[in-house]
Length: 340
Image (cartoon, rainbow, N blue to C red):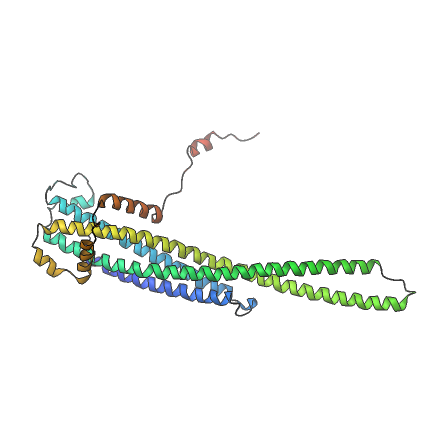
């Protein structure tokens, strides 16, 4: 059986990575909040720095999810081994039909009930800490996601306003172009010097106004481009946070059912071991899990079906799936004839 104490390092690493990820996301969200409020000029935004900030936050989130996922799977694997050892107390041939490494290790003979209980309670102790970590992670990640979405909505609304402003400036520019065209076509002859002078003055004013409108449009277009780039950067982080919240929910659901399975197995083993000695070795976290299990009238009910469902959801949402391969792709390629 995988020794329970080997989980300690994984749990500490997962906890530290979660803290780093949340700190990184909070820093990125705070920067995004400043943009949403219109703090600073768009020309002064350091886009490479912001891209690095968001990328590092997303990488930390992915690393946390990978560590938590590995922990859930390793704890489940340890539970399966404990369950196999429990069944071998009654039939030593169980599991030997499988020529896997686990079956060969188990061939030495069944473990004592007390040894299985000790390992299983250590797994439960880690399960309690991981469950607490999930309960801390989900609200923190959800808050980060909602804050990010809120500030993104502010940026998107600001971009829409810029779109309207740009359209208005372009309408003014079109109207001014029409005026300039009209004046060029209807300029008086040199015989009307006084009238020509006045029109030249008006024409110069129109040209100055046209230049001012062009500067306004260039500034608005620059602000819009910067705003869209910020939206693209932070939408990636929002999508990652959304995936993280869903992943934590799936892992929490599986962990809850797995804990029920471990406690049910622990109770089955207790009938073959010295009860008082086992209770004395329990940690407070394990005792709290058992008390919650006993207080829940539905705990353990239809456990096999609920675990199968939780495992299916867990696999569908979190396990990588191979890309579909087109049927007869090789045959199609082989049968294809060059065009003539």
